[in-house]
Length: 424
Image (cartoon, rainbow, N blue to C red; front, side, top):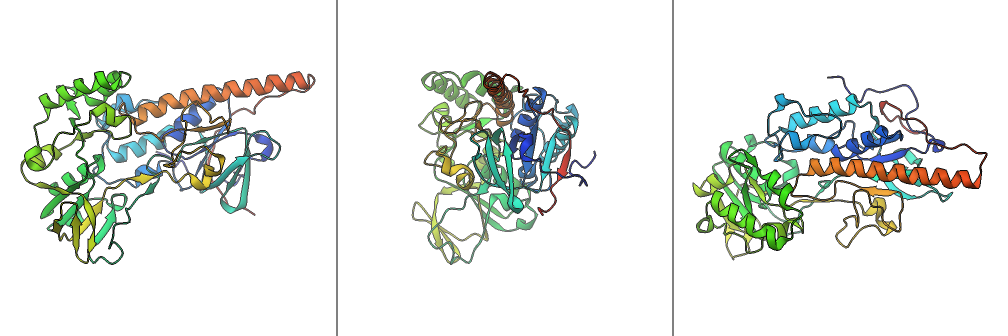
């Protein structure tokens, strides 16, 4: 596969007069949206702060596989190769994203980080402040920097004075450094569950999983039927109808783990999913807990030297603590001044809708849908492209009415992928 980030001797930052649509972020959402825009004849430039596309995926742990099926995880315009298998591995996801950018000839500028987005001085479009003092003017902006942007590590009491090793799950790669050691994993989401199982299979002497709120656990696939398809079919139903169906399926397929510290949640699966708490897709956690290879303990409350304090008053003294405690979107510096974020720092709208206070600004990839993130990113990409095209057509029509003799239109799409050179 060709390197999609080969340096080019040509100038790489489009001039202000070009007015492309700038897509911030070279992950799946950004690439899918850029392709959807180009397919409508709209020039889209992807700005990626790292040196390659798919940077977020490159930071994930080695064991990671998609919990969504290959067929339902493809981005618009390119199928995921059958050779990747039903549950695509992390490295294959990265290969797919590289191929996707090359296959569609996407215009990607790497090594450029956007620090602030604000309305353009002339009142039309957007001004982006970026690496090296660059100021880029775009007709629209799509923010696609991702759900898992910046690791979040709770400010536990005693954390800074602890003597036990502590790292965020974003720094975890594989179980090799923990063979023969006692490890506490904090957080029972999909990442925490995967890492706990990886540690067990990788030879850790003892693995404990600290749980504050017991998750819903579902089989990734049951009799060949993937859990993702159930999520797609049921997500539009009212929670009062979908929750009982999910509860019945769980009772038939997942054993009761209450005796091992993982009671079935009282709140329904879909009720919790609407607030962002998606279920854990089982890749070995159920068996590991039943066999005592992963021990469930109470939530972490703090540190005391080499000990970890638990919510039930207990104390444990692991060799290492891996915090699968999530991420923050880190959008405040970029768009927080525009009034487009809620109290938790999440965009108030996503997909084809622009905030009323910021027309022409779009967000994708900031939700965690039960129907599959990559699938929803693909749907959002098409909707955003349609909305941008409609808005551009409206602007041209208004300009034509104001100046009948003036011909407008967006420049035809480019097709280069380049590294940014230092600003002069």
